[in-house]
Image (cartoon, rainbow, N blue to C red; front, side):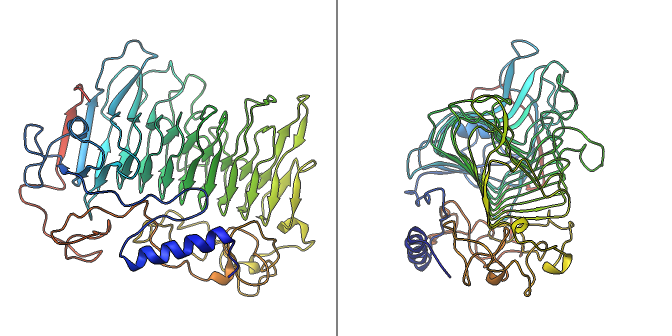
Length: 507
Protein backbone atom coordinates (compact mmCIF):
# COMPACT_ATOMS: atom_id res chain seq x y z
CA UNK A 1 0.00 0.00 0.00
CA UNK A 2 1.27 3.46 -0.92
CA UNK A 3 0.95 5.83 2.02
CA UNK A 4 1.79 9.54 2.13
CA UNK A 5 4.31 10.44 4.88
CA UNK A 6 1.64 11.89 7.17
CA UNK A 7 -0.44 8.72 6.86
CA UNK A 8 2.59 6.57 7.70
CA UNK A 9 3.17 8.60 10.84
CA UNK A 10 -0.49 8.37 11.83
CA UNK A 11 -0.47 4.63 11.24
CA UNK A 12 2.44 4.28 13.68
CA UNK A 13 0.53 6.33 16.23
CA UNK A 14 -2.56 4.19 15.73
CA UNK A 15 -0.54 0.99 16.14
CA UNK A 16 0.97 2.27 19.35
CA UNK A 17 -2.46 3.23 20.65
CA UNK A 18 -3.85 -0.20 19.79
CA UNK A 19 -1.04 -1.85 21.71
CA UNK A 20 -2.12 0.12 24.76
CA UNK A 21 -5.76 -0.84 24.36
CA UNK A 22 -6.81 2.63 23.28
CA UNK A 23 -8.99 3.65 20.36
CA UNK A 24 -8.88 6.83 18.33
CA UNK A 25 -10.17 8.20 15.07
CA UNK A 26 -7.06 8.91 13.01
CA UNK A 27 -7.63 9.97 9.44
CA UNK A 28 -6.82 12.90 7.21
CA UNK A 29 -8.58 16.13 7.97
CA UNK A 30 -8.69 16.11 11.75
CA UNK A 31 -6.44 15.37 14.66
CA UNK A 32 -7.24 12.41 16.84
CA UNK A 33 -8.92 13.27 20.12
CA UNK A 34 -6.77 12.24 23.05
CA UNK A 35 -7.96 10.17 25.96
CA UNK A 36 -9.19 12.47 28.66
CA UNK A 37 -8.20 12.45 32.29
CA UNK A 38 -10.84 10.73 34.40
CA UNK A 39 -13.56 13.06 35.65
CA UNK A 40 -16.80 12.42 37.46
CA UNK A 41 -19.36 10.01 36.02
CA UNK A 42 -23.09 10.66 36.23
CA UNK A 43 -26.20 8.86 35.01
CA UNK A 44 -29.52 9.96 33.53
CA UNK A 45 -32.49 7.66 32.92
CA UNK A 46 -36.08 8.10 31.69
CA UNK A 47 -37.38 6.99 35.10
CA UNK A 48 -34.80 8.98 37.06
CA UNK A 49 -35.27 11.93 39.41
CA UNK A 50 -33.42 15.23 39.22
CA UNK A 51 -33.42 15.31 43.04
CA UNK A 52 -31.50 12.02 43.12
CA UNK A 53 -27.73 11.62 43.39
CA UNK A 54 -27.05 11.08 39.68
CA UNK A 55 -25.45 7.71 40.36
CA UNK A 56 -26.00 4.48 38.46
CA UNK A 57 -28.45 3.31 41.13
CA UNK A 58 -30.12 6.72 41.53
CA UNK A 59 -29.97 8.49 38.16
CA UNK A 60 -31.21 11.94 37.27
CA UNK A 61 -34.16 12.39 34.92
CA UNK A 62 -32.93 15.08 32.54
CA UNK A 63 -29.86 15.96 30.54
CA UNK A 64 -30.56 19.60 31.47
CA UNK A 65 -29.96 18.84 35.13
CA UNK A 66 -26.75 16.99 34.28
CA UNK A 67 -25.61 19.93 32.17
CA UNK A 68 -25.97 22.25 35.16
CA UNK A 69 -23.61 20.07 37.21
CA UNK A 70 -20.87 18.77 34.91
CA UNK A 71 -17.42 20.26 34.41
CA UNK A 72 -14.60 19.52 31.96
CA UNK A 73 -13.69 15.82 31.86
CA UNK A 74 -17.01 14.58 33.23
CA UNK A 75 -19.12 11.87 31.59
CA UNK A 76 -22.91 11.59 31.63
CA UNK A 77 -24.24 8.16 30.69
CA UNK A 78 -27.74 8.25 29.23
CA UNK A 79 -29.66 5.07 29.89
CA UNK A 80 -31.82 3.49 27.21
CA UNK A 81 -35.45 4.39 26.68
CA UNK A 82 -37.43 7.36 25.42
CA UNK A 83 -37.06 10.90 26.70
CA UNK A 84 -40.21 12.59 25.34
CA UNK A 85 -40.31 16.39 25.39
CA UNK A 86 -43.43 18.56 25.36
CA UNK A 87 -42.16 22.12 25.83
CA UNK A 88 -39.01 24.15 25.24
CA UNK A 89 -36.87 25.47 28.09
CA UNK A 90 -38.10 29.02 27.43
CA UNK A 91 -41.20 30.64 25.99
CA UNK A 92 -41.53 31.74 22.36
CA UNK A 93 -40.98 35.51 22.15
CA UNK A 94 -42.89 35.48 18.87
CA UNK A 95 -44.06 32.99 16.27
CA UNK A 96 -40.80 33.48 14.37
CA UNK A 97 -38.53 33.25 17.43
CA UNK A 98 -36.27 30.28 18.21
CA UNK A 99 -36.41 28.12 21.32
CA UNK A 100 -34.51 25.07 22.55
CA UNK A 101 -35.71 21.80 23.96
CA UNK A 102 -32.17 21.08 25.25
CA UNK A 103 -29.37 23.63 25.54
CA UNK A 104 -25.78 22.45 26.00
CA UNK A 105 -23.84 25.62 26.79
CA UNK A 106 -21.35 24.39 29.38
CA UNK A 107 -17.92 23.70 27.85
CA UNK A 108 -15.26 21.09 28.40
CA UNK A 109 -11.59 21.74 27.72
CA UNK A 110 -8.93 20.47 25.29
CA UNK A 111 -8.30 16.82 26.14
CA UNK A 112 -11.13 16.92 28.70
CA UNK A 113 -14.46 17.15 26.88
CA UNK A 114 -17.80 16.85 28.57
CA UNK A 115 -19.33 13.59 27.33
CA UNK A 116 -23.01 12.78 26.95
CA UNK A 117 -22.88 9.14 25.92
CA UNK A 118 -25.39 6.37 25.51
CA UNK A 119 -24.83 3.78 28.18
CA UNK A 120 -23.01 0.88 26.48
CA UNK A 121 -25.45 -1.46 24.77
CA UNK A 122 -28.46 0.84 25.20
CA UNK A 123 -30.21 3.43 23.01
CA UNK A 124 -31.47 6.70 24.51
CA UNK A 125 -34.13 8.23 22.24
CA UNK A 126 -34.85 11.96 22.45
CA UNK A 127 -38.36 12.37 21.03
CA UNK A 128 -39.46 15.96 20.36
CA UNK A 129 -42.57 15.14 18.33
CA UNK A 130 -44.94 16.18 21.13
CA UNK A 131 -43.57 19.71 21.45
CA UNK A 132 -46.23 22.37 20.85
CA UNK A 133 -44.19 25.59 21.05
CA UNK A 134 -45.55 27.99 18.42
CA UNK A 135 -42.20 29.10 16.94
CA UNK A 136 -38.98 27.59 15.54
CA UNK A 137 -37.60 24.73 17.62
CA UNK A 138 -34.10 23.34 18.10
CA UNK A 139 -34.04 19.85 19.58
CA UNK A 140 -30.43 20.09 20.76
CA UNK A 141 -28.80 23.53 20.75
CA UNK A 142 -25.06 22.98 21.26
CA UNK A 143 -23.42 26.34 21.97
CA UNK A 144 -20.64 25.05 24.21
CA UNK A 145 -17.20 23.81 23.19
CA UNK A 146 -15.38 20.51 23.72
CA UNK A 147 -18.56 18.46 24.06
CA UNK A 148 -18.91 14.87 22.83
CA UNK A 149 -22.35 13.39 22.10
CA UNK A 150 -22.35 9.68 21.31
CA UNK A 151 -24.93 7.01 20.57
CA UNK A 152 -28.09 9.15 20.76
CA UNK A 153 -31.24 8.92 18.67
CA UNK A 154 -32.83 12.32 18.05
CA UNK A 155 -36.23 12.52 16.37
CA UNK A 156 -39.41 14.42 15.69
CA UNK A 157 -38.69 18.16 15.99
CA UNK A 158 -41.87 19.79 14.61
CA UNK A 159 -42.94 22.97 12.86
CA UNK A 160 -46.02 24.27 14.65
CA UNK A 161 -46.82 27.12 12.27
CA UNK A 162 -46.12 27.97 8.63
CA UNK A 163 -44.34 31.31 9.19
CA UNK A 164 -40.77 29.95 9.16
CA UNK A 165 -38.43 28.00 6.92
CA UNK A 166 -37.59 25.12 9.26
CA UNK A 167 -36.91 23.79 12.72
CA UNK A 168 -33.74 21.77 13.52
CA UNK A 169 -32.93 18.41 15.04
CA UNK A 170 -29.45 19.39 16.23
CA UNK A 171 -28.14 22.97 15.95
CA UNK A 172 -24.42 23.60 16.53
CA UNK A 173 -22.68 26.92 17.10
CA UNK A 174 -19.86 25.80 19.40
CA UNK A 175 -16.39 24.56 18.48
CA UNK A 176 -14.29 21.41 18.86
CA UNK A 177 -17.31 19.23 19.50
CA UNK A 178 -17.82 15.62 18.40
CA UNK A 179 -21.14 14.13 17.31
CA UNK A 180 -20.68 10.39 17.03
CA UNK A 181 -23.11 7.59 16.23
CA UNK A 182 -26.08 9.95 16.20
CA UNK A 183 -29.27 8.85 14.45
CA UNK A 184 -31.22 12.05 13.70
CA UNK A 185 -34.43 11.67 11.72
CA UNK A 186 -38.03 12.64 11.00
CA UNK A 187 -37.58 16.33 11.76
CA UNK A 188 -39.36 19.22 10.07
CA UNK A 189 -36.02 20.66 9.05
CA UNK A 190 -32.36 19.59 8.89
CA UNK A 191 -31.24 16.64 10.95
CA UNK A 192 -27.95 18.27 11.95
CA UNK A 193 -26.98 21.88 11.23
CA UNK A 194 -23.64 23.60 11.91
CA UNK A 195 -24.37 27.33 12.05
CA UNK A 196 -21.09 28.52 13.57
CA UNK A 197 -17.89 27.26 15.15
CA UNK A 198 -14.95 25.24 13.93
CA UNK A 199 -13.11 22.03 14.64
CA UNK A 200 -16.36 20.07 14.93
CA UNK A 201 -16.37 16.40 13.88
CA UNK A 202 -19.56 14.64 12.81
CA UNK A 203 -18.59 10.98 12.89
CA UNK A 204 -20.50 7.85 11.84
CA UNK A 205 -23.81 9.69 12.03
CA UNK A 206 -27.06 9.17 10.09
CA UNK A 207 -29.63 11.80 9.08
CA UNK A 208 -32.73 10.66 7.23
CA UNK A 209 -36.45 11.06 6.58
CA UNK A 210 -36.47 14.79 7.30
CA UNK A 211 -39.32 16.77 5.70
CA UNK A 212 -40.30 20.38 6.43
CA UNK A 213 -43.96 20.15 5.56
CA UNK A 214 -44.86 23.65 6.84
CA UNK A 215 -41.95 25.79 5.61
CA UNK A 216 -42.91 29.29 4.49
CA UNK A 217 -40.71 28.94 1.39
CA UNK A 218 -42.42 25.73 0.33
CA UNK A 219 -42.76 22.21 1.67
CA UNK A 220 -39.52 20.26 1.43
CA UNK A 221 -37.29 23.24 0.63
CA UNK A 222 -35.27 23.32 3.87
CA UNK A 223 -34.95 19.77 5.24
CA UNK A 224 -31.35 18.78 4.49
CA UNK A 225 -29.77 15.77 6.07
CA UNK A 226 -26.68 17.74 7.11
CA UNK A 227 -26.08 21.46 6.78
CA UNK A 228 -22.95 23.53 7.39
CA UNK A 229 -23.30 27.28 6.86
CA UNK A 230 -20.39 28.65 8.88
CA UNK A 231 -19.13 32.26 8.88
CA UNK A 232 -15.52 33.13 8.10
CA UNK A 233 -12.69 32.79 10.57
CA UNK A 234 -13.48 29.32 11.91
CA UNK A 235 -11.35 26.20 11.76
CA UNK A 236 -12.57 23.52 9.38
CA UNK A 237 -15.43 21.17 10.20
CA UNK A 238 -15.50 17.51 9.16
CA UNK A 239 -18.21 14.98 8.27
CA UNK A 240 -16.81 11.44 8.25
CA UNK A 241 -18.57 8.10 7.81
CA UNK A 242 -22.02 9.73 7.62
CA UNK A 243 -25.17 8.77 5.71
CA UNK A 244 -28.00 10.98 4.43
CA UNK A 245 -31.10 9.50 2.77
CA UNK A 246 -34.73 10.33 2.12
CA UNK A 247 -34.26 13.97 3.08
CA UNK A 248 -36.68 16.32 1.33
CA UNK A 249 -33.99 18.81 0.30
CA UNK A 250 -30.28 17.93 -0.02
CA UNK A 251 -28.26 15.19 1.63
CA UNK A 252 -25.29 17.44 2.53
CA UNK A 253 -25.58 21.21 2.00
CA UNK A 254 -22.63 23.62 2.34
CA UNK A 255 -24.23 26.74 0.90
CA UNK A 256 -22.97 30.03 2.41
CA UNK A 257 -20.11 28.29 4.24
CA UNK A 258 -17.25 30.78 4.63
CA UNK A 259 -15.04 28.31 6.53
CA UNK A 260 -13.86 25.07 4.96
CA UNK A 261 -15.64 21.74 5.26
CA UNK A 262 -14.37 18.23 4.54
CA UNK A 263 -16.82 15.44 3.75
CA UNK A 264 -15.26 11.99 3.50
CA UNK A 265 -16.30 8.36 3.42
CA UNK A 266 -19.98 9.33 3.40
CA UNK A 267 -23.08 8.25 1.46
CA UNK A 268 -26.10 10.19 0.15
CA UNK A 269 -29.08 8.71 -1.67
CA UNK A 270 -32.71 9.37 -2.60
CA UNK A 271 -32.67 12.96 -1.39
CA UNK A 272 -35.04 15.56 -2.83
CA UNK A 273 -38.24 13.56 -2.41
CA UNK A 274 -41.03 13.36 0.11
CA UNK A 275 -39.45 10.61 2.22
CA UNK A 276 -40.26 7.11 1.06
CA UNK A 277 -41.92 8.26 -2.18
CA UNK A 278 -41.04 9.38 -5.69
CA UNK A 279 -42.82 12.72 -5.18
CA UNK A 280 -40.36 15.53 -5.71
CA UNK A 281 -39.79 18.00 -2.89
CA UNK A 282 -36.67 20.18 -2.50
CA UNK A 283 -33.43 20.56 -4.46
CA UNK A 284 -32.37 16.92 -4.22
CA UNK A 285 -28.57 16.99 -4.46
CA UNK A 286 -26.53 14.35 -2.71
CA UNK A 287 -23.57 16.61 -1.91
CA UNK A 288 -24.06 20.35 -2.45
CA UNK A 289 -20.55 21.69 -1.95
CA UNK A 290 -20.78 25.41 -1.42
CA UNK A 291 -22.14 28.40 -3.27
CA UNK A 292 -23.32 31.81 -2.10
CA UNK A 293 -26.77 32.20 -3.56
CA UNK A 294 -25.54 32.11 -7.16
CA UNK A 295 -23.36 35.22 -6.79
CA UNK A 296 -19.60 35.60 -7.02
CA UNK A 297 -18.13 36.06 -3.54
CA UNK A 298 -14.44 36.92 -3.06
CA UNK A 299 -14.57 35.37 0.40
CA UNK A 300 -15.17 31.88 -0.95
CA UNK A 301 -13.24 28.99 0.60
CA UNK A 302 -12.35 25.55 -0.74
CA UNK A 303 -14.30 22.50 0.39
CA UNK A 304 -13.34 18.85 -0.09
CA UNK A 305 -15.57 15.87 -0.85
CA UNK A 306 -13.74 12.55 -1.11
CA UNK A 307 -14.26 8.78 -0.93
CA UNK A 308 -18.03 9.30 -0.89
CA UNK A 309 -21.01 7.82 -2.75
CA UNK A 310 -24.16 9.41 -4.17
CA UNK A 311 -26.93 7.54 -5.97
CA UNK A 312 -30.52 8.02 -7.10
CA UNK A 313 -30.82 11.57 -5.82
CA UNK A 314 -33.43 13.74 -7.54
CA UNK A 315 -30.77 16.12 -8.88
CA UNK A 316 -26.97 15.98 -8.89
CA UNK A 317 -24.90 13.49 -6.99
CA UNK A 318 -22.09 16.04 -6.52
CA UNK A 319 -22.93 19.70 -7.13
CA UNK A 320 -20.70 22.80 -7.07
CA UNK A 321 -23.75 25.06 -6.63
CA UNK A 322 -22.28 28.20 -8.28
CA UNK A 323 -19.17 28.04 -6.09
CA UNK A 324 -16.69 30.77 -7.13
CA UNK A 325 -13.54 28.68 -6.66
CA UNK A 326 -12.59 25.07 -7.35
CA UNK A 327 -13.44 22.56 -4.65
CA UNK A 328 -11.66 19.19 -4.49
CA UNK A 329 -13.65 16.10 -5.51
CA UNK A 330 -11.45 13.02 -5.12
CA UNK A 331 -12.33 9.31 -5.39
CA UNK A 332 -16.09 9.62 -5.34
CA UNK A 333 -18.71 7.32 -6.89
CA UNK A 334 -21.91 8.70 -8.41
CA UNK A 335 -24.60 6.37 -9.74
CA UNK A 336 -27.91 7.16 -11.39
CA UNK A 337 -28.06 10.88 -10.56
CA UNK A 338 -29.01 13.68 -12.97
CA UNK A 339 -26.26 14.61 -13.38
CA UNK A 340 -23.72 12.58 -11.45
CA UNK A 341 -21.25 15.50 -11.32
CA UNK A 342 -22.50 19.05 -11.90
CA UNK A 343 -19.63 21.53 -11.57
CA UNK A 344 -21.63 24.72 -12.15
CA UNK A 345 -19.59 27.62 -10.80
CA UNK A 346 -19.50 31.37 -11.24
CA UNK A 347 -16.66 33.69 -12.25
CA UNK A 348 -15.84 37.18 -10.99
CA UNK A 349 -18.05 38.69 -13.67
CA UNK A 350 -21.04 36.62 -12.60
CA UNK A 351 -20.91 34.31 -15.62
CA UNK A 352 -21.52 30.57 -15.32
CA UNK A 353 -18.34 28.49 -15.59
CA UNK A 354 -17.16 25.05 -14.52
CA UNK A 355 -15.39 24.99 -11.15
CA UNK A 356 -13.76 21.97 -9.51
CA UNK A 357 -10.66 19.80 -9.18
CA UNK A 358 -11.76 16.26 -10.03
CA UNK A 359 -9.58 13.16 -9.75
CA UNK A 360 -10.32 9.44 -9.59
CA UNK A 361 -14.09 9.88 -9.66
CA UNK A 362 -16.50 7.31 -11.09
CA UNK A 363 -19.80 8.19 -12.78
CA UNK A 364 -22.14 5.44 -13.99
CA UNK A 365 -25.69 5.65 -15.37
CA UNK A 366 -27.83 8.74 -15.08
CA UNK A 367 -26.34 11.82 -16.74
CA UNK A 368 -22.61 11.55 -16.17
CA UNK A 369 -21.43 15.17 -16.08
CA UNK A 370 -22.44 18.76 -16.74
CA UNK A 371 -20.76 22.17 -16.61
CA UNK A 372 -17.27 20.70 -16.91
CA UNK A 373 -15.80 23.40 -19.15
CA UNK A 374 -13.31 25.28 -16.99
CA UNK A 375 -12.76 22.53 -14.44
CA UNK A 376 -9.46 20.83 -13.66
CA UNK A 377 -10.53 17.24 -14.30
CA UNK A 378 -8.44 14.17 -15.12
CA UNK A 379 -8.19 10.46 -14.32
CA UNK A 380 -11.96 10.13 -13.96
CA UNK A 381 -14.07 7.32 -15.43
CA UNK A 382 -15.41 9.50 -18.25
CA UNK A 383 -11.86 10.15 -19.41
CA UNK A 384 -11.17 6.46 -20.14
CA UNK A 385 -13.05 6.31 -23.43
CA UNK A 386 -14.77 3.05 -22.49
CA UNK A 387 -18.44 2.22 -22.00
CA UNK A 388 -19.07 0.99 -18.48
CA UNK A 389 -21.39 -1.91 -17.69
CA UNK A 390 -22.67 -3.57 -14.54
CA UNK A 391 -19.92 -6.17 -14.88
CA UNK A 392 -17.39 -3.59 -13.66
CA UNK A 393 -18.91 -3.92 -10.19
CA UNK A 394 -19.45 -6.62 -7.61
CA UNK A 395 -23.02 -5.35 -7.32
CA UNK A 396 -25.04 -2.34 -8.43
CA UNK A 397 -27.81 -2.88 -5.89
CA UNK A 398 -29.35 0.24 -4.39
CA UNK A 399 -30.86 -1.68 -1.48
CA UNK A 400 -29.35 -2.25 1.93
CA UNK A 401 -27.35 0.96 2.18
CA UNK A 402 -29.24 1.81 5.38
CA UNK A 403 -28.20 -1.49 7.00
CA UNK A 404 -26.98 -1.44 10.61
CA UNK A 405 -23.48 -0.16 11.10
CA UNK A 406 -20.58 -2.38 12.05
CA UNK A 407 -19.78 -2.96 15.71
CA UNK A 408 -17.28 -0.11 15.74
CA UNK A 409 -19.83 2.29 14.23
CA UNK A 410 -18.33 2.36 10.74
CA UNK A 411 -20.42 2.00 7.59
CA UNK A 412 -21.78 -1.47 6.74
CA UNK A 413 -19.54 -3.64 4.56
CA UNK A 414 -21.47 -3.99 1.29
CA UNK A 415 -20.42 -5.20 -2.17
CA UNK A 416 -22.55 -2.51 -3.83
CA UNK A 417 -20.71 -0.23 -6.29
CA UNK A 418 -17.38 -1.79 -5.34
CA UNK A 419 -15.20 -2.73 -8.29
CA UNK A 420 -15.16 -6.33 -9.48
CA UNK A 421 -11.85 -8.19 -9.44
CA UNK A 422 -11.51 -7.82 -13.22
CA UNK A 423 -12.70 -4.22 -13.47
CA UNK A 424 -10.86 -1.98 -15.91
CA UNK A 425 -11.18 0.86 -13.38
CA UNK A 426 -8.58 -0.70 -11.06
CA UNK A 427 -5.28 1.20 -10.89
CA UNK A 428 -6.54 3.84 -13.34
CA UNK A 429 -6.28 6.82 -11.00
CA UNK A 430 -3.55 9.15 -9.82
CA UNK A 431 -2.23 9.87 -6.35
CA UNK A 432 -4.15 12.56 -4.44
CA UNK A 433 -2.60 11.85 -1.05
CA UNK A 434 -4.94 9.01 -0.07
CA UNK A 435 -3.69 5.45 0.58
CA UNK A 436 -3.99 2.86 -2.18
CA UNK A 437 -2.80 -0.58 -3.25
CA UNK A 438 -1.41 -1.54 -6.61
CA UNK A 439 0.40 0.66 -9.10
CA UNK A 440 -2.11 3.54 -8.83
CA UNK A 441 -5.37 4.35 -7.04
CA UNK A 442 -8.57 2.76 -8.27
CA UNK A 443 -11.41 4.94 -9.49
CA UNK A 444 -14.35 5.57 -7.20
CA UNK A 445 -14.94 5.58 -3.47
CA UNK A 446 -13.74 2.04 -2.75
CA UNK A 447 -10.23 0.69 -3.31
CA UNK A 448 -11.01 -2.75 -4.78
CA UNK A 449 -7.76 -4.43 -3.82
CA UNK A 450 -8.36 -3.53 -0.21
CA UNK A 451 -11.16 -6.13 -0.21
CA UNK A 452 -13.70 -6.07 2.60
CA UNK A 453 -13.26 -3.02 4.81
CA UNK A 454 -11.02 -3.92 7.76
CA UNK A 455 -12.46 -4.17 11.22
CA UNK A 456 -10.95 -0.91 12.44
CA UNK A 457 -12.38 0.99 15.37
CA UNK A 458 -13.51 4.46 14.38
CA UNK A 459 -14.16 6.14 17.69
CA UNK A 460 -13.36 9.75 18.46
CA UNK A 461 -11.79 8.90 21.81
CA UNK A 462 -11.36 5.97 24.13
CA UNK A 463 -14.20 5.37 26.53
CA UNK A 464 -14.01 6.24 30.20
CA UNK A 465 -14.25 3.21 32.44
CA UNK A 466 -17.78 2.19 33.37
CA UNK A 467 -16.81 -1.26 34.67
CA UNK A 468 -14.82 -1.69 37.88
CA UNK A 469 -11.17 -2.51 37.30
CA UNK A 470 -11.15 -1.65 33.59
CA UNK A 471 -9.33 0.97 31.57
CA UNK A 472 -11.48 1.08 28.44
CA UNK A 473 -15.06 -0.09 28.06
CA UNK A 474 -16.04 -0.48 24.41
CA UNK A 475 -19.16 1.47 23.50
CA UNK A 476 -20.70 -1.58 21.87
CA UNK A 477 -20.47 -3.91 24.85
CA UNK A 478 -21.56 -4.15 28.46
CA UNK A 479 -19.36 -4.99 31.46
CA UNK A 480 -18.25 -8.58 31.01
CA UNK A 481 -20.56 -9.13 28.05
CA UNK A 482 -19.43 -9.09 24.41
CA UNK A 483 -21.41 -7.23 21.77
CA UNK A 484 -24.79 -8.80 21.09
CA UNK A 485 -25.24 -10.55 24.41
CA UNK A 486 -27.75 -9.46 27.02
CA UNK A 487 -26.48 -7.99 30.24
CA UNK A 488 -28.43 -7.43 33.44
CA UNK A 489 -29.57 -3.78 33.65
CA UNK A 490 -28.50 -1.66 36.57
CA UNK A 491 -30.70 -1.70 39.67
CA UNK A 492 -33.85 0.45 39.71
CA UNK A 493 -33.70 1.27 35.99
CA UNK A 494 -36.16 0.47 33.23
CA UNK A 495 -34.34 0.93 29.92
CA UNK A 496 -37.60 0.85 27.95
CA UNK A 497 -39.38 3.38 30.16
CA UNK A 498 -40.72 6.59 28.61
CA UNK A 499 -40.31 9.91 30.36
CA UNK A 500 -42.56 12.80 29.30
CA UNK A 501 -40.65 15.96 30.11
CA UNK A 502 -41.80 19.56 30.35
CA UNK A 503 -38.41 21.07 29.69
CA UNK A 504 -39.10 24.62 30.80
CA UNK A 505 -36.24 24.50 33.29
CA UNK A 506 -32.90 26.21 33.62
CA UNK A 507 -30.12 24.62 31.60
